[in-house]
Image (tube, rainbow, N blue to C red; front, side, top):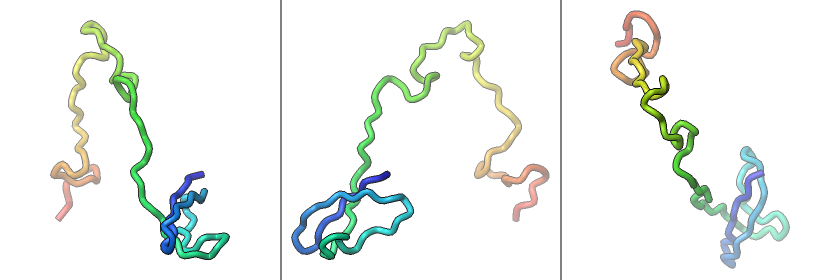
Length: 92
């Protein structure tokens, strides 16, 4: 369950509360009734290592089939100047 940091608006004390993602933010301290507000912090995420995916961190040899460049498919991507619906272009 996520932990959120709140600050007392009168005394500037900080509190941590465990709440669900869909729970509304507290406006008053659940025990004292003092007015509080939720503080926003950057997430504490640390990425370590040489790559995120297995294919990013492994050295590929030239003779393996995985190292050959992929061929371009004829499927268009949305936002590339065409409709995202397959078939004849009917966008206006």
